[in-house]
Image (cartoon, rainbow over all chains, first blue to last red; front, side):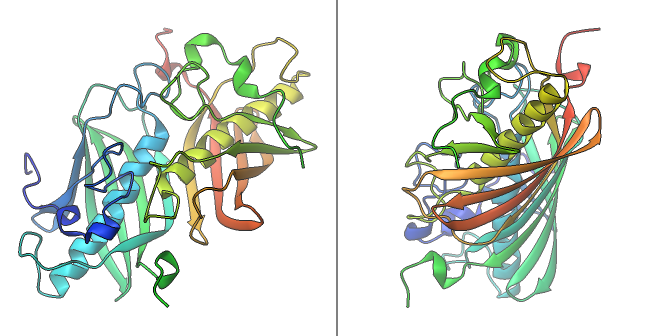
Length: 161
Length: 161
């Protein structure tokens, strides 16, 4: 498994789409999640800030949902970008996805103070609709499993006519 | 529909369980979500901070997930508390729930700058397991639908033996 993500898909998003609280590199209040390839799987690593508490000692479920959400859209973007012949780092703007649906099973309490790893497997449902199955690990413990249905961002998210 | 939540279940959580990033009254970095009854439905209102952006102009999906999550556990707590003969404001500590699973369909982009309202309907699955179906509105627009399966907090979340 990679120790860090060198080339993240979020590094390549157009500036207008780089303000997401979860994964926008320009949102300085946000999580700045970064998602890259690890062989044919995808990976996002994140060490939760102290305030992302559920019960003291454990990570907030909404933070885990955010991690799975942005990992999902990032993974879908990586996959379609690769299908189009590109990799993050080659300077070509990737497709931007949004989340159509999100399902999470919280399996075990997630200990705070550990870097979380979201590992994703991607399936093409349709050229503009990709499913990402994610497992979130705290150390060796799988704490949550998620499914994101990601779709290419529709024009309702922009000012384009 | 109520204009504000006078007696929220989160006001009654024990101090040790009031640090949640989403709904802990003692977490000053968090959202301080507050959930109360509105007839036989439950309601949580929240005006997203500017940084909770997805694409500029629209609210971050992870924030909506957090709203649905804490609204779900709060609603389950309200329901079991009422079943036990209590209402928030009567000074009796309510049961504390955690989220077993979370499902969200994002129906429409959620405009920023509008107070969101999460409206919940609750179903008892088992005395310690409650399902909360939630609709999130921005103004009159239903932007997301969620289902939370909430369970009474197990001892794995505490230091109790």
